[in-house]
Length: 100
Image 1 (cartoon, rainbow, N blue to C red):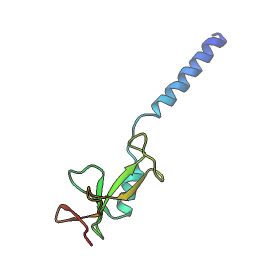
Image 2: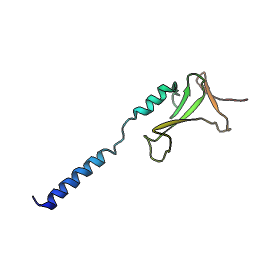
Image 3: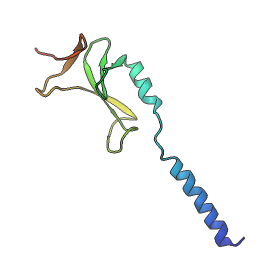
Image 4: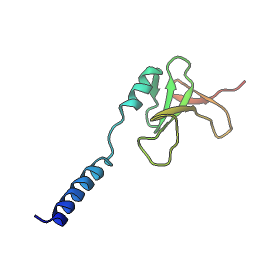
């Protein structure tokens, strides 16, 4: 084998390793963050969760599922704000604005 052939084989092997690392995978940090904070998913609403203690609704941002999100680590939660600019609670399977 020539040096050129050996170099080509090494480059192809490295490229295969790099490309396989780009495949999407599940993120265990997301599920551990959800259970640690006592959050439950709101059925039928993507990325919406509520605190089982306060019933306040949160939106989960995740850097593992999409490119472009920026957060602190792999996932973080921000309070969900309604169209009227109010925080919300999840009461009797309905998202309700908190009015004060």
